[in-house]
Length: 270
Image 1 (cartoon, rainbow, N blue to C red):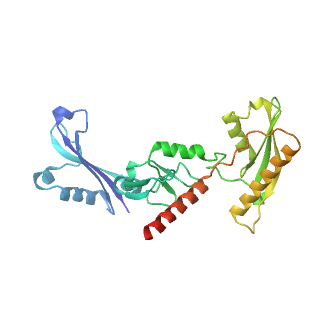
Image 2 (image 1 turned 120 degrees about the vertical axis):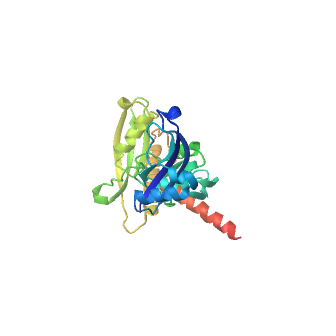
Image 3 (image 1 turned 45 degrees about the vertical axis):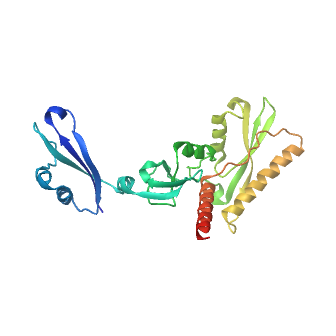
């Protein structure tokens, strides 16, 4: 399948000697086999003398109407034409209109990959850039777009780790699905636990991956292990600080969005 991007200009040599001219029209074609066929489509689009005189290159030292035809792809075709009827991925505000009018994100691990606007499973739309930015502030950034690297050939589901601030004599116990130094790096960049010179890092334990259970059950086991170690340190009289609830992951936001859509469909049926 071939895509082409067509832009039509009105060119006046005296006025536009160093410019392309005035843009008269812009559109895309798809399912066109060649540029020659695209040219024929341009001629059919216009009637009368305009169709007869239209050029396909910028005129030299004379006036005229000309079209530039460039190869394109599905992404830009959809961006120009695709209409969406969905909800903001973050605040769930109703969205309706051209896909190109709304901020969007790729929900796969390949965050910087090309977005397929028609892939509703892996493309998120937002009502504003504020909503988009807020989503990523809320995410657990300990490698959300990195590949998980569980230890022991996949036998380990996650880790419970300890950070100790020697100057303040405070402890922080956390969990991670990734190799712990990714998470430690984020703590240091955040600065909330102290300076790197004052902190020691260690892994308390690894939590085994139960191959007979789903991810939700394994995650609950990891949460329980974290809570147990926090309770243990408190019972022993240590000061444990900054025990924040785990932030939502991208998968959690996906699930919340699906549940909201399902509820909307149920309301529509009623």
